[in-house]
Image (cartoon, rainbow, N blue to C red; front, side):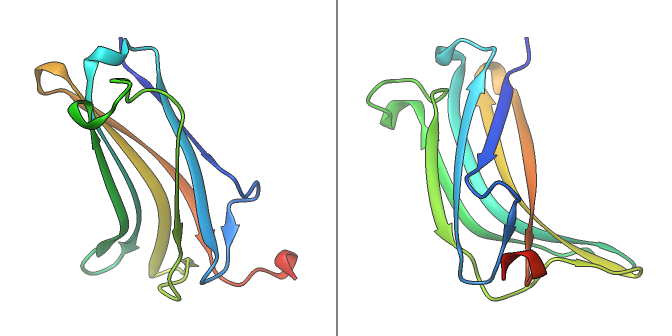
Length: 128
């Protein structure tokens, strides 16, 4: 059975301004905890569109089974990171800039799976 990875941003509308602190909860379900050997959480941006695609990691955290005192990497876990000033989310016709939280689970026998939760980084009218 494939693990289910859930990612919840504490900001309900998933919109952030530069300098805001992103807080994120994640957990892994539908798999016995002993099958998850490591978990990586990252906050990253990437481009898509014409030309070369770019990607950069803003925040990265790796947790391994041997370092976890409960020996359970599946339980609810929270991290936070201040967001940078740029690049801002952009939805152009030629190029797009996307931000997301990615959680990757490393399982036994070399298997891995991941899930991404997009969010918006920029100046939004609704945030006043």
